[in-house]
Image (cartoon, rainbow, N blue to C red; front, side, top):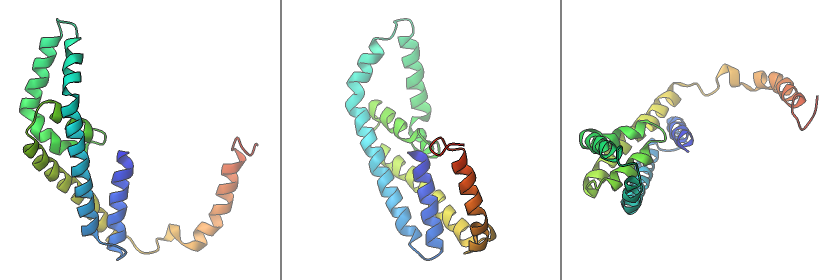
Length: 168
């Protein structure tokens, strides 16, 4: 659930900016969790390598060599850096780790790149959230109790009126 993770890290930074936690603790937990998850995905790719080769062998003979050559060339040029860059593309992070494992990337190199990507990604989200949280006032005008109290009841009523559970 990529969007949930990004939102959680930004919110952890914002909360830490108001003194209700530590941005550094959130950063450390995000780096550790992400690096461990990526390493697990890397080993899934390693374990799936025979099945991937078998699947590749079942491709039509006219496309197999060309496709395999393009994939290997892409990985040779961009593969290692794609591990770092995939952190910034939700949904690609673990897919890239699986590909890295199936392409026999050296584990030490993979872990080093995964930790670099995790540090960059986590710092952007947590400390970016901390900056936003530090600049946000404690009680923005649209979230004040008076304002919310006057619009909550009509909004809830309007929402429920069109609800299939309540009826028109």
